[in-house]
Image 1 (cartoon, helix red, strand yellow):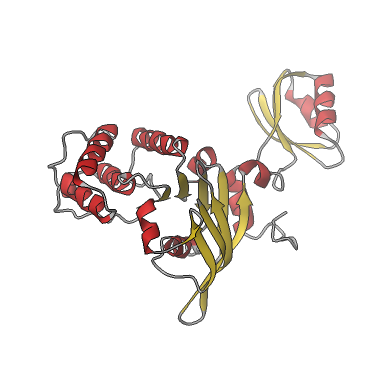
Image 2: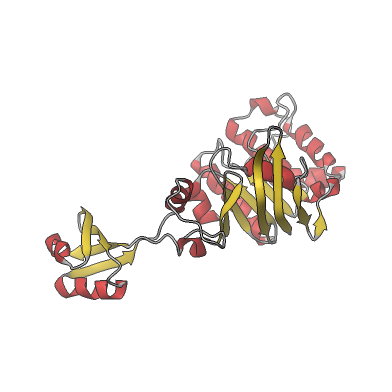
Length: 307
């Protein structure tokens, strides 16, 4: 649905905000766009939205070069709310729908569906300024999806939402994914992204530094640590060769092992001296990967991947 090939953008003063960035988003896929403040995320999104043009590279949406007409099949939820506070909910959504070329009947039908979906049914005549921040975010989301876009760009969609409404949003986005929508999910909430996205795109200092599924990305970031659930005296764990006991919490311990021993051998050694209730490698979290890359603890290979 979206193909971004080697786009770059330099602003006045020679500041290169984006340098030869590529990514793609397929129908039915959620791509998490991550990066620290000032990394180039917003500039990249603005180029995809055709708000600004890239100096180099190309952007194709549904196989065609991005144009003003492309905007009609894109839904965009900005981080900063763009609602008219003195306007009513109904009038606001009717206005946004008309900008996408929707007819009045379809606008009313879709508005009624989404308001009911987000527990705002019957509130069309309420002014936006009368709503809580969370409910304003719901209206902003509805404005982004009202015209049934093929490509949906969500920038910090959970802003201002309590945990219950975050679940409501996730369910709605998951349903849109199942309908075949291509979705870009920009967020600093890495825990949400880790459970929510299919593919991850990490940008830093204008350059793509990681790109792929969490499974593929994790391969280069595994630490030789495991979580051990056990019965008996924890002191046995401190005597396992080639290991270091990192921490103990009740009948659970974190054990670090060096590269001279493989995991299956370690399991056997522990099972020989004590009763195991569980043992599992500790998978690196998205936060750990993010911090490792951004802080420069990872070396870049000739292929541009990080190892």
